[in-house]
Length: 322
Image (cartoon, rainbow, N blue to C red; front, side, top):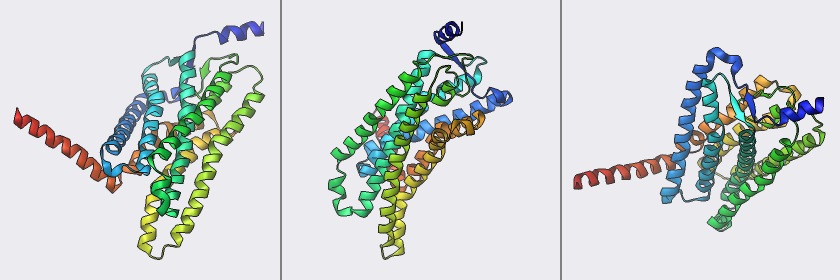
């Protein structure tokens, strides 16, 4: 009887996302706020990609990595936020079985790739500050391209493996996901078979994904700090540190939000707390990254003025010619 019930529920074609249904009176307010942050996120990250591609002054390893980070943030935002915005306006928040699996696989792929990319960006800062004479050769365009490709490829086994194994389990009881998108922890709550080995693999994978880039970042910044402290002038130390400050803030935001959710035991993190923390790394952090890393950077501001100022000039000349 139980086996038949489990099989029947497994064959259902949809889940229901609970989202922020416990905040029914704030649905419209949340919609407006999240929509505004979504528009800022898309605008800021697209601007980074445009200026880092078109302005020769920004054709450096740091901005190459930043451009790829912006692309990851755009993909991650598009994977989660549009569906969340629609659900905030609908009474029944439904997602199909296949769409849920696709969304989860992209979440794992993009979060893992971003984690690895942040480690690569820390290594770039290490090379720039600790080995400036070897920086041009050691971080040439070919090396940077291979590093970015490696970040993407290394994430694929985690994405496909974890998603396919999780969705091979039977789902019993309620098909209501206590979250605003398909994530591993709330989906595990719906599984009615033994998940010991899956949880063991999940813990191992999470440790590898988070701790290896974190160790690389920490080791890089230990060396960077040692090198900066040896610079004789205070102005030189400030200038060297300023090239790393934005990356440090972005890394801290990432590990204090996404890292917290996926490393903290599920039993000690309530569902509503999990939603709030997840909201910070799915909506807030992608919006803040371009502001922290680039839009308050003098080089990027100058590139924006050059890029869009030149286009306005060309448009005026074209109109005069007509």
